[in-house]
Length: 186
Image 1: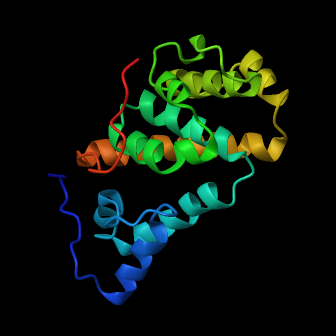
Image 2 (image 1 turned 135 degrees about the vertical axis):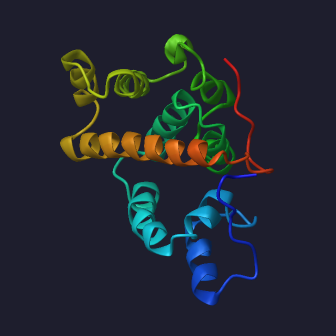
């Protein structure tokens, strides 16, 4: 049981509509536990929605690249909850193979030789940000070979956002969603 109890139906019309907007496309399940807990503070949830929805639905990074970053960030943060939601709801749709998805949880994610050079650069950047909260010049230069400045800014925000979401899910001790993919071992 989470540390803060999630809202349960029936929801007020306003909360029900807000929760529906947060759900991943094509998911016909009850709103995510994370969202139902966040709506214990509707003002905070509303502010968070703007950034989260913008990163998922209106980002400049290719969808596959975005999901690689999210998978690696949540895996490095030990967030089985969010890793599983994205693995289930987005990974296959954006072209992330089961082997690549598994590699996002590995100690050495780039040991899988199926990664494109830009994806290797993303994985290295996520790891470096996780470990040091900064990017070295070689890592930055590797990213710049594949991405434009607006995408690089988005990458930094995306990584930080999913680190924040991981803190939230882990701090609340959220159980994995029943329908989500269990986090894979390396």
